[in-house]
Length: 341
Image (cartoon, rainbow, N blue to C red; front, top):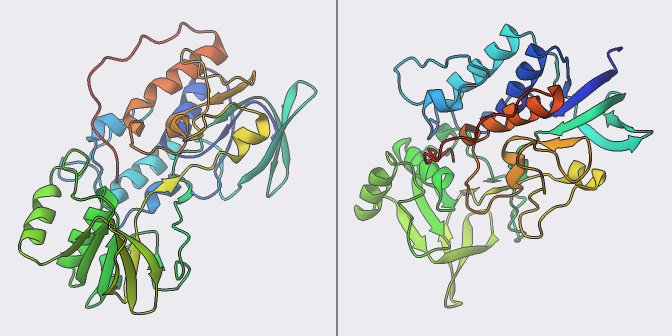
């Protein structure tokens, strides 16, 4: 087969997509693999030195150990370095910065269109993740330059009045780190309190102490309704609207999966989250020859239950289905650690 044709094509260059590429290569199958951005792109969104909730062994892939400098949970930088090292070790050929724009079945095969050309494959694996784009609030001012849906570095908010919107790990970590970095932080959350069951255990005591000491101003049971250059208008549950001063705004209200390719191929999706229908034994969807792997199996998750660490079995199931090997044993019932940034 030439470089434009393969038996299997993988769309997605995140941890599970890479792990599957290694598994197939070990089985003698050289897949075409596409990544719209760079290896591990969504992890690159994390702020510098953000640490995973999961331990190193649970997010290691392809049997390659993941070591950290201080034997603690991996940081953003350590994990991105690790993923690149896996690509180098197995000499994976990933078409980075080459988004797949369309896939269609033609004459029993799949034709794949990207920004750089056309390809064909007998089987397709969609490992496109569950956090492709921000969940937009669609309020006035959301597009302004001082508003972002990504927390990138506390440095940007030094000596600025910052409003963080959200109440899960991303928002709490941003609030704590920006306060420690010298910004004046307020937090708006639509619920009446933070849920300790979903906040990283090392963050909850910090955010609680800062709130109790009035060092971070909180606005619980509120949602933003409009943003101006120096303030954000919030609405309480009772309908009352007021404003808080903010020269910078972080809207950390979650992210959505991009299920465009699934829809193009005719994969059945659930109504609420757009999670794809698939055979749990093989990960094959209702469309013959189309498989799903990784967090894409959850579509847009409202409460995260699918993480890197409990998706490794997807790789084993797909590899077995494509090679005719014995299917893997069911994973243990041990509750996974959470991996929600």
